[in-house]
Amino acid sequence: MTEFQEKLENKRILVTGGAGFIGSNLCETLIGLNAKVVCLDNFATGHKHNLEVFENHENFKLIEGDIRNLETCHKACENVDYVLHEAALGSVPRSLADPITSNEVNISGFLNMLVAARDAGVKRFVYAASSSTYGDSEKLPKVEDEIGKPLSPYAITKYVNELYADIFQDAYQLDTIGLRYFNVFGRKQDPNGAYAAVIPKFVMQFMKHESPVINGDGTYSRDFTYIDNVVQMNLRAITSENEKAVNEVYNTAVGDRTNLVELTQLLKKHLSEFDPEIANVEVKHGPNRAGDIPHSLASVEKAKELLDYNPSHRIDDGLKEAVAWYWKNLDPEAQTK
Image: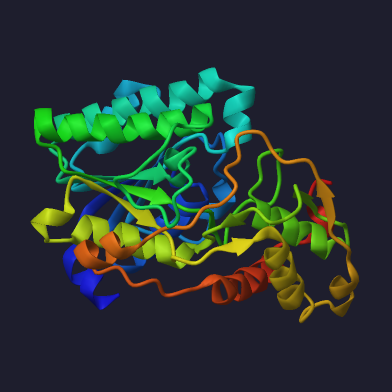
């Protein structure tokens, strides 16, 4: 991390959605690099307990507010060098159930942040894009300049983000980089709620000796990406001095794919090291989920070439660390059932 500390020490960095899963990991890493971190969050999906490790640190400032409020965005961007924009309403099913709110947060809120960053003279605006942008494109691996038709309101919002970012570079010379996240998992990811991601949700069910339900026959596959790889990509995006690297979008992934059956087998293997009984928990199958794409696999060649990205964790390494974190930090009996 020395290479990043030299470039980020004493820099003022705004992390929107900083109390969320990815945002809080970014905040913690940046504070460890001696950066000055401003966190903007309305706690709609983020959690205050994600900030406990560093909330009293002298280089951390919390602004409780909503990106749908332009005045709040302007306040958060004051004297900021870089923005890491993570705030969004994730989840394909959530966007299908409530497309209006997803649009308000993910598009109107995103536009507010671009305007505020532009007005504040921010040096670079790095934002969370999404692999959902590839839509119905069946080509594997996914390469950045070949996308299909969006399959959900959420996917539309994330694609519109890319279009707006491109316009703000052309019209206002605001440097932007979009990171298309592929199924990120790891420490601090919430296992609860109707829209919980599959890995923490399955981990919690296995810990309770409950049978997780796979959507479909389990052959759908994903490029599951450990949080440390995502943190690395964000750091490379804000520190890169390669002029060709800016005003681009990048797959943020590993370049491997794992199907859901294989995923549950790996989870059982690692969890069984803590509780041997988990090896005997059966897995059930349900219907496919609306809006889901069958397979997702990223090419990370562009990120390697232009950002010097080198994934530190593949699926098995990441799951081993994630499972150990969940086992230490989560009490299944205290979780909602």
